[in-house]
Length: 360
Image 1: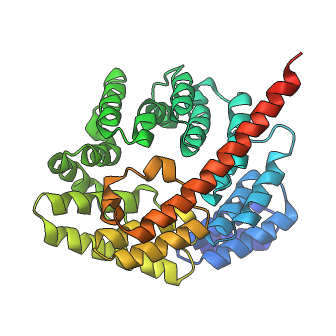
Image 2: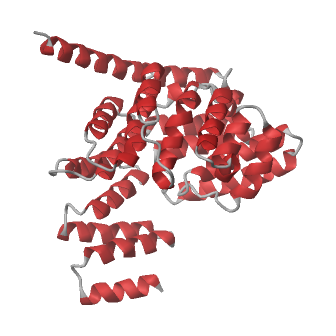
Image 3: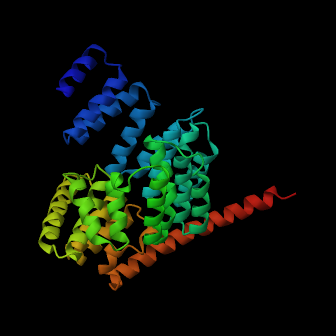
C-alpha cells in the first residue's frame, strides 16, 4: 500500500525527492533492493546533496560490495559547508568497514572536533574516535577518548545509548569481558535502568563473561525473529544464544538456531546482498559455530578481501576459538594484523611530522 501511495505522489510531483526516499525504503522492505537503489539514483540526479537520499544510496552501494562508490558519495556530502554530523559519522563507518583506518581516524577526529551538534550526543562523537583507536590497537587512547565522552550523562533516548556504549565498550574491545559486564551494570545502575531492559546487550555480555545460563534466559525471549542482517544485533545475538545453548546442554536447540542463521545468511548471499565486510565476518562465525571450519575460513577470506580489519577488537573472541589452532586462520589473522600495523605506523609518522612542523 505504501508503494502504491508513494508512486502516486511521484506521478503528480516527480521532483519530490523525499517521497522517492520513502519509496526506496518501502521497496527495500520488500527485498527489492535494486529497484530501491534505482529510485534513489533518480532522486540524486534531481538533488545531488540531499543528505538522507545520498547516504541511503551510499549504504546501498556498500552493502552491494562497492565501498569505493559509497565512500565517494559520503565524502562529497562531507565537503559541503556545515555538513550533517550524521554524515560525518556515517563516513567513519564506511571507512571502518572498508578497512581504510588512516582515513577512518581522520574522519573520526573531525567528528569530535566538529561539536556543533547537541551536547547530549557528545558520547556518540567520542565513540567514533575511541573505536577507531581500539581498531588500531591503541586501547589506552581509546579508553581516554571514551572517558571524555561520558560528560554530560544524557537522561534517555539514543543519546543515553551512546553514553552506555562509551561506558563499557573499551573493556569489551580489549577482551576484558567481566570488566565490560561490570561497567555495563554500573552504567545502567547509575541511570536507574534495569540491565535486563537492554536484554540483547546484557545477554551477549553475560555469555562472553561465561554466564551462559543467564545469557540464555535473556537472549532466547529477546531474539524473536530478528535474524536479519539488516538488524545489526540479529546474527550476533543468534550466534551467541546458540553458543550458550550448546554450552548448557541444549545442543539440539543450538543446531536448529544455527541452521536458521545459515539458511538466512546463504539466501542473502545468493541474492548478492551479503557483500559488506562485517556481514561476511558474521556469516563466517555462523559456519564455525555449526562445525564447518572450511566454510568459515572461506568466508573470512572474503571478509578480509572486502576490508575486514577488526583484528585488535576480535582476536580474543571465545566464539571463534574453534579456529585458534588452524594454520589457515593464523596466517589470515597475521595478514590482517600486519595491514593494521602498517596503517598505524603511517598515522604515527603523520602525527610526528605534524608535531615537528608545529614546534617553534
